[in-house]
Image (cartoon, rainbow, N blue to C red):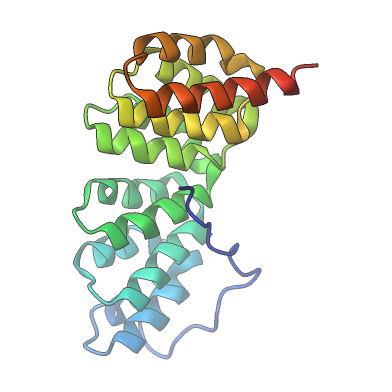
Length: 204
């Protein structure tokens, strides 16, 4: 099931809070922390401070503000603050992180090859979801290359689902490889057939 991407970031940052937003990220009041997190999206040194805050934050609204500000920052530094949380045991935090990374495709693109080749199948599966919002040709090339060597059926299924939605005909060979490799997995062979049908129809 694809994630519903959060709305795009606002055109302008919210008004800065009175006081030091870096220090206010540790305030006892969650509303103060949330306001501070929103103010740090465009501040020099904001991403590292937001990353440290995200690692300790438990309030859902503050977490949302932090990940949204990192998405607004849109830098490689912001991506690096988010990536470790793909390994979190907290499903709600992982969802926020995936949504934020999906909202910054240019910055995350350099990290997708490593994510799709990660030793942890859960990370590879999440990487397929992140690739969903990448430009179609680039995502197809990355996912097709990863799918051709993927051994885990659940991860392969996630890659096939994304390719069926945003892929191009360049993925067809990799889909045939997956179809043969996972011939004993009915859910996956069906998903490959659906993807192949769509991509073949889309061929010029």
